[in-house]
Image 1 (cartoon, helix red, strand yellow):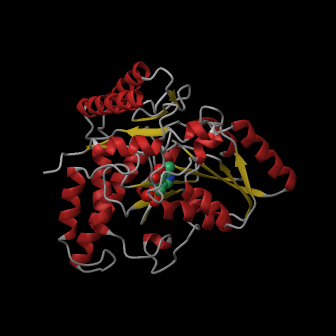
Image 2 (cartoon, rainbow, N blue to C red):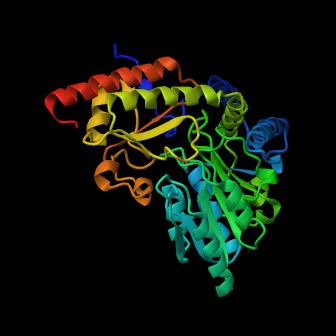
Image 3 (cartoon, rainbow, N blue to C red):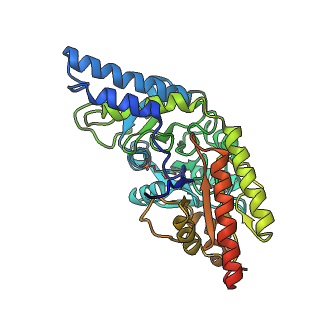
Length: 382
Ligand SMILES: Cc1ncc(COP(=O)(O)O)c(C=O)c1O
């Protein structure tokens, strides 16, 4: 029998919540298409609309502002690629710390991409945003501004109040990738500045394969997949009712997550790391961070070696962004923060979520200690 693994990678995907599983299985039993007018169709429509209300509530949105998609990547692509066209943008502004989904979408617009730098703690340079807005006004062009709320690698919370205050009152369009913020920060989409916001099911305990684009009324014209007119014409394709039901149930459950308990686990891990390896570097340490994640490096201990060693001990952690190919690739986020490549190559990310327990933090600390002292004995770690 294999040893049960300890899962410490909620920022990559959070395990399925029991509430989401029940909602998923119940909805899978219902035949039909939510767009059908007969009783079976109406029953599925009710499932979809319940999910919509639940996701809307967690995001502080109105139900009609929620457009379901197959992933946050799709929602982000809709916002940026279709948004740039719909709002006739002359350039896209994106921070250097955006997820690949946003960076690739910005590139795909074919427009000039103006990049906002990050500071050493991973915060978006708001002065650079102000300069970009002034430049756009001087050039007489509209901008599509794409920023993330919470960084998936470092957990750094971006200064969204200041960003919203800058872009909100202008004619420029503000899109926010809130994938790592949903369920981890109080969100109030309807009353805040963003015109559009993307969220994802599998980061909060629903299965992968469902996301949403939140849109204010004037952004209803932003359409990537016209199709059969579903989602009020804003995203074609039969709604994945069961996945939407699971997303809704996960959203409802996530509202009760105890983020301070998760923050205590992160503090426990970081305190232990500092004792174990006094030269440990914790990325984004001086910035405001969401409570569930720690991204750190012990100089001389490469990510790939550490991840393999810890994996053999049944500890599933990440080297940073796990969204791409399963390879340990250099982090563009850490590079943008000015972290030297050698140190960035030692980055490890531990992220907790709805079912994490103090025992998980303790298992990580014990495993890391064992692994680190073995390497020290062998003379391979600093
Ligand atoms: C910040 C951020 N944006 C976008 C995504 C993409 O989400 P999805 O997997 O639903 O396409 C992720 C996933 O890791 C993310 O962390």
